[in-house]
Image (cartoon, rainbow, N blue to C red; front, side, top):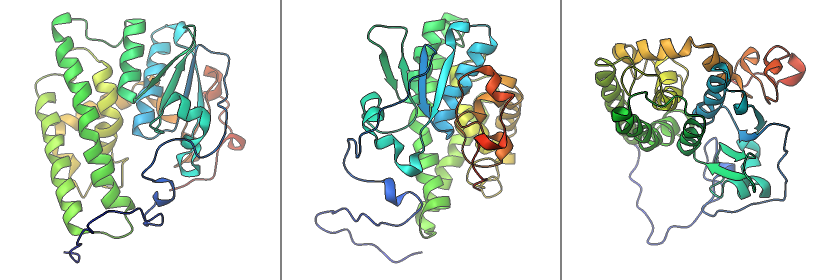
Length: 290
């Protein structure tokens, strides 16, 4: 175990606290600089990055378009959180919490802002009456799993992921504590998916899209290089579900949008038209950041 930390009587912010994201973390909100957001030609303007929370929304848009809902066309603008883009004045106007993703819906006058990935999924699903369970009696189940994800994922990302992958030192207690919780969550999902093909039952819904972006990608070995450490292969129903969703072409496209890291072949920094996937050339992508 690491040395015991004795908290001071009054906490103060140390701006250089270490870790991968130390330079962008701060205890105050609001913009740090003036920067307007770009606006494209489509009804929906998305400002995001292909972290799991961002992937939820780009997958949703691609699924809507694949379902033939042309009114769901969108522009996706890259918000590089490592560079502090989320603290630009334009972005803070859309999301005062300075987190991706953020959406402006220009089908209303004035345009409507939506932030928080779960709220965006629900907004789009209700707007287009798509990827909601077909059985109204199962809608509470769908919403329960959607909000379960919103409440549970911080333990996976900000808890386990931070201390396992990003913290300046490997501390035994937080890694063990959050690894235990993530495995408990995987067990919750695994038991549910032993009963039904999708989280709400027979229908593929926004509950699956939200959970897949985090737990599905974890089961597929894409988060924190932690699949072996967490023995994700033990959760066979989660793996089955994750692989099935991963095989959907819309999911594969959505995972690429606003991606500026990893294998260059998987990156599409900005998306303004369906043809962008066909012209995803090297001049549009950054060097691989593993």
